[in-house]
Image (cartoon, rainbow, N blue to C red; front, side, top):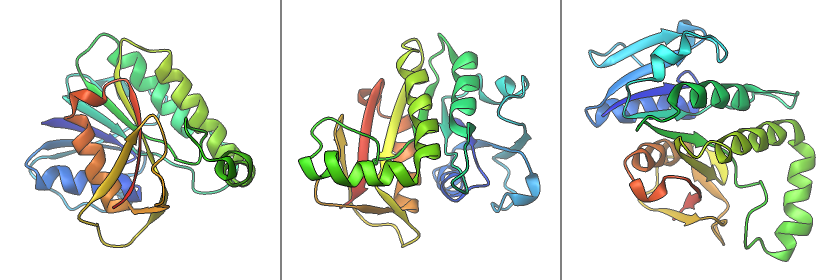
Length: 210
């Protein structure tokens, strides 16, 4: 596999790069600041320096088997980081066979939400994280309006830095019930698994620890 990881200097992105290299894949790590990339130099690792709106970003994502977008705001301020990155990648990948896998959040409304979740938990979470969630909703809308792109949206539950678990629970089109957190290492692994899973093309899948 030959993949590109956007957000490679972030916690999930960095783990995805390491996991892909461990699988023997060739990785292009897209970063704005190479000094923030924590992954050691590797023969199968290329580093590309681009902003999310840089026209040259297309060169870093075209011709790949998969593109993984693992971006996220670092504070509660208004942001367009995910929607900008998604818009740029969608523009470059239209009509190609490249898989595009993005990280969203299980806090967004989903089919089958319980009454408590729909009326209490998710509204409270959405109020606190309204700017980041607004950006994620824009990101997901961009993908739903691009059926010619082979995308998958991955919505993890609350992220932790604990060691990876053996099992990950997943549900397509609805939240995972009864589990509320997942290690970032498991999210990184699942992103790569999803990039190879043709059954997840055009699907939104929620994941949590087993």
